[in-house]
Image (tube, rainbow, N blue to C red; front, side, top):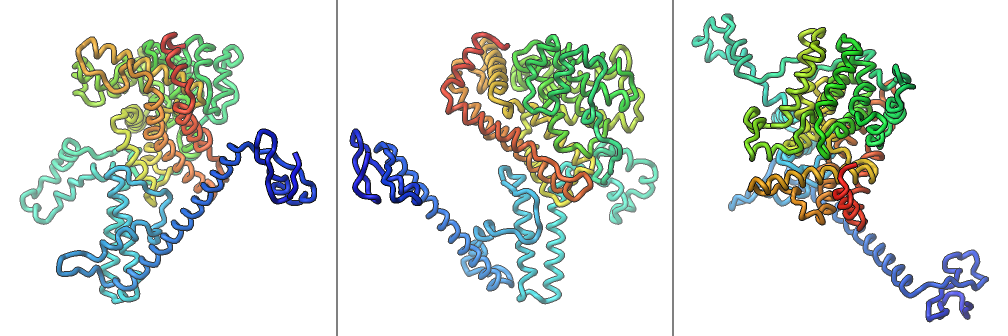
Length: 588
């Protein structure tokens, strides 16, 4: 169509508005070519322009508000350096600027990870940092230059810093009871005269406290040499050519989205045995001083003890072994020893061994024999850990840990137990809070055994729910499997006259998309974001070391998939319908 004016618009065919091409291509103003736009398209463009205008106004408003808060904070520090003034009614003027202080940028202590006070524990940590910043502001105030005041502020600042450190080391803090210091107390010296030398202090410490005496719990740095996992440099394994499944693992070991179901088919329905041999075969004989044949027998025995549940089966264990090992390679590549790698791999293999397809709450509510044995506490996880060590101590009548020193044996046992118990989801938010607080500590360092173990615990925890971060088809398959297992539990609860547990009612299958999106957003995503923060910390350390820079992988491989999967559950109308079809057909 043509038009009479360059800058105007004219009606085109069917009443559609026409804009001159010069509007879009100013360099061609002489030629009066027109772009035909439908009225709905014009409305859409106007809407986008209005949205951009609103966004710009909001940004200007936020910037203005931030500048105003900064000015208020500066005025407060300048005029109230001698402390908070209290009026006759008892109202503290500092409360008026409390919000300003909370939103001001910290200057005292640089922190590597921003805190989100999602729990009371993180709120306590945040409050301590805020108090430290307030003291720092006061020390910088010229009105408080008096030496005595500065000395007092220094003491307060030191005390707060000590509290922050104790909070960051909360696992050690709550167990730190110095019995010998109690005996040395002058006020008790007369009453306890001679008892310390009798061994009573050692007896009390051993029997009435829970202090960690193993080397893995120490905060001292131990630079490990020659400990780079053999897995990372593996190129060939015995029988590699004769085993297509082993070749699949070797080729896909570094691929987060490795299809474990394909591996299970290639491995004659024994993906766990194949993957276990791949991981443990090269390093376990050297770390545990045992034969490779014994390692293979162990992997076979573990795989055979997984029941044919829809979800908690040997395929799931192989998936967790793959994802967990991938995460530790991202975060602990330069730090883990072979023995630590073996302990982690064994825990991943055994973390759900003999799982009955029902959760802990079901075991407790039905007074299952396991619940009675483990006193309703981490019922399944305690059973998995106990079964793991029964296997380790009796593989073909041989103790796989028999050649280790007592200290190494206790270290390995302690780590495996910690890793398996970390998969208990009842402590999910507690563990996540402790981890985020620990990462904010200035002395967080992967060279310390305790921090390495903590990171590894979070890795196996993330791997246990890691299907949320897999490509859609794999995630959807796992989601159908876990739904099937939940519904079987709900059916049994209904038969027993018990209340049907949340997410276990098959009549509510249409709500699966909503529950999955919520689970991914509120449970899975924060955990992987914390691990991504840890990876960023490892990258910073790598930049200052001889190892050079490291590629950030958790953000791109895991978090991006979680967000995409979460959105798809609600945006794709076929998502739930396809799961329904899978439930009718049964797991594949």
